[in-house]
Image (cartoon, rainbow, N blue to C red):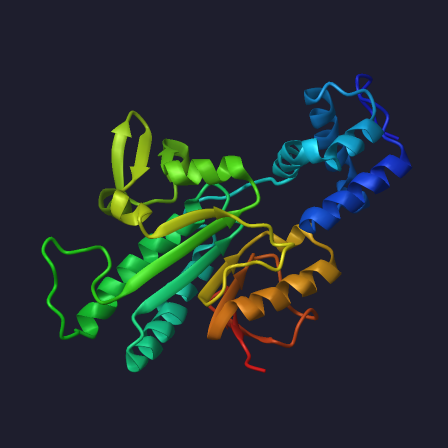
Length: 300
């Protein structure tokens, strides 16, 4: 069934057991096209645990002592591909249209809070990108809509009385730690222009950049498993890009319903460029502008 002479044979019953366990734990579904990838990751963990059969490995994963190994396996099953300013047309829609609308509505209600959730944040480039774009958008919005509040000195990143919270979550502890550290190499910074580097990063060594403390303070990293019901509530905007591709249609529908419940009234959901809610829900309305796509929550 599988190649590589050093690999332990994975029988169909063992494969089904492990596929079911992974699906139950985090919702990831591995069909025939991705079975080779799953087998490769399982072989790695089998060698790391020094076990001789996949049934032994399954027994370990389902035991009380196997919780850490189950976490390690799930970390190995996510690709964690990310970058700063990924899919710029979508981010333009976020900053110039969606944020503008939300800030206007909130100011009318004298609600000065903004809460954004980056679900599946990987090593932090997405939530830090959002933090920088929100800071820029608020500064520009403040110029056009001055408020009767004294501006502190030195000028803060987020003008008062606005309060911004960006929650960054992932199922992978190692990428969360990297995001919390907030240090990136030169090749990570390719999409970050000079002005953004100057305003939002500190050069901390040859080819090393650290996110400034004022930006890091806006982002809170935390572990969340999208399979569970205990997810962050009262969000104005949710970004969950290139995550649903891991799920089958039934799990995608369940996740979209959870996102609907996690969003404030008239909130917005952003999914990956190759992902769509078409045929999965009637609880969101699609917005398309200059090759950027988002979904606005429809109230029941």
